[in-house]
Amino acid sequence: MERNFADALDARLEFMRQRGVTDPYELAQIRQDYISERLANVQQLLDKCLEAVPRYLAEHQCSDDEFAQTWALMGGVWNVVEFERIHHIVRIQYSYPQVLQVAKVMGRMADDSGPERIPLGAGDSQRVPHGAHSDIEGIGIGNDLSSLLPLEMAQMADSDLNGLFAYKFATRRLQTFSYKSQIMHPSHKLRLHKARQKGPMVVCLDTSASMQGVPTEIAHSLVVKLLQLAMTQDRDLLLIPFAVSARPFDVRRNRSKLLDFFRTEAQGDTDAEAMLDLTFKTLCGRPEYACADVLWVTDFQIPMPPEPMLRQMQLLRENGTKFFGLQIGETRENHWPRYFDRIFKLPYESRLRPWYVQK
Image (cartoon, rainbow, N blue to C red; front, side, top):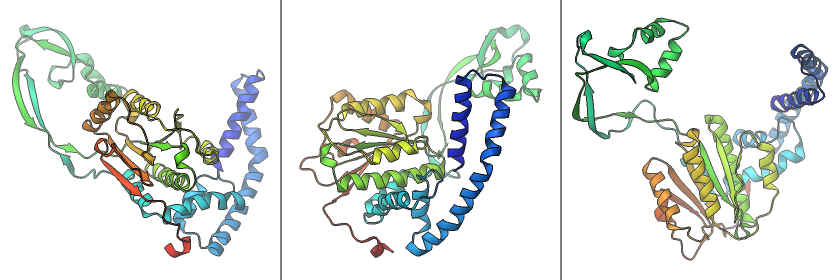
């Protein structure tokens, strides 16, 4: 509800700007008037939701988890018909335990309190002994605190500039003295790496004709569950629907687009090349996706792409990217498993059990 109200307010202000209103004081007054006029209606709508929702949930025995997933896609406005339509998608995941297993793997969080691995580092180290002023050869760039220029030391001591100092230290952009006596030494050392928080999730969803019917419903239910995880853990969720072409969108920022996507029908052939190309560009070209986990939801009836693309997948895996798959249905010959960390298999031919059996 808050998001819808904010979007409507932004749209109103943008409309006024297009009409030629640019004065900030006038725009601020328009904002205030808009909020004042609609505040009572918003409060009335909120009261109505608070009254209707608990009663409906009690009557229909809807769990908190089911409600949270469904409500996240409703835009903050209570509507029984829309709730039941989305709720049907959510309930599918409780009939197929593989869906929740995949969500658990994608939603795992690293343990910040413990080590993840102890790699061996090898190379050259630079040791700078304390030298006389005559040993100074010039000015360089780095993060050696023992060789700082007075200017950088002043920034470190200044409460208004120490943030800039910290940034320059982290990016090795501090100005430092260079010494003639700097010596390069071979070095080997063990580095203890802390486990990191999980990065964004990239979901590649097969929308070809072979995924029509139950497979599509299962895939949609999994996406809703992953959206809940993304919101809870404050992670980005990029969805790449693919058949022959691929059209990605950010699910958290385009939840209405996700609902529109759920209304589309699976059709066409399958080709992974466009999807892989988009995946590689996202992982390699957007720093915020460097630690992403990638999930394919498909029947894996996909022709193998050119060898360079397969090598790129392997290279990404070696650098820490995890590739998971949910195989819905059976395929006669599947050459993909060697390129994935794990593929979950879901034989969808089994009939859906009634939702109340799972309670």
